[in-house]
Image 1 (tube, rainbow, N blue to C red):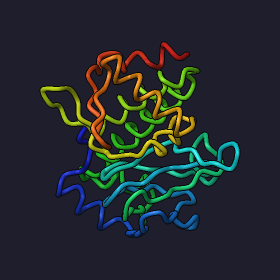
Image 2 (tube, rainbow, N blue to C red):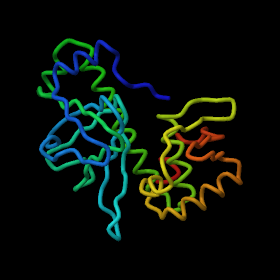
Image 3 (cartoon, rainbow, N blue to C red):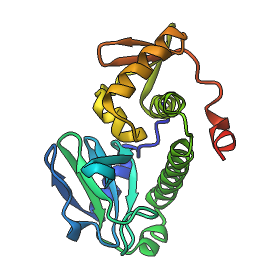
Image 4 (cartoon, helix red, strand yellow):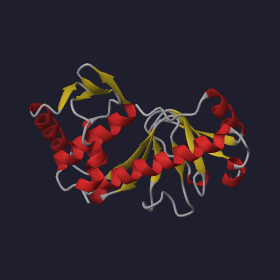
Length: 217
């Protein structure tokens, strides 16, 4: 729903300043391509994951086409040891020029890149706020709304999320067990918050998502 991706002109300019890195579904981007890098997802979908308790991994961000990712020399900001894994076959355009050179090039790419990086920071801050919510059911509905705000489509029934994530993927995002997510989805459906049809979720209400950071502080 946000539509932050670059236009054809900006994309062509961005491609001329970048090196493409292809990642097959299930594989991780090589660390050598990430150290100190700024990249833009040009194809597919990526997940930023960290190791969690009991040998499990936790997804802390999902990235789609047009999303920016920035890795400092220490890794993903605020998440040491984070890795970028391809949820589908994907490609990332890794900037081959210094950021200040891109920003001063006098093209539309610099302005777009700043907006994309700002959006990435805002999305990350919202994810952190959601993670602080102690109730799993509440974390789940807030995460679904966050995903629907980016990937959802408005329909007469509500906002339809066609991302087709599995219950296990949702569990990885909110730090819960798959079985608990399945139960929580059932409760949310009983409460009229969502409608679940196979791997499609329709969200009935999206009106209080902006208050999540305050509510979970």
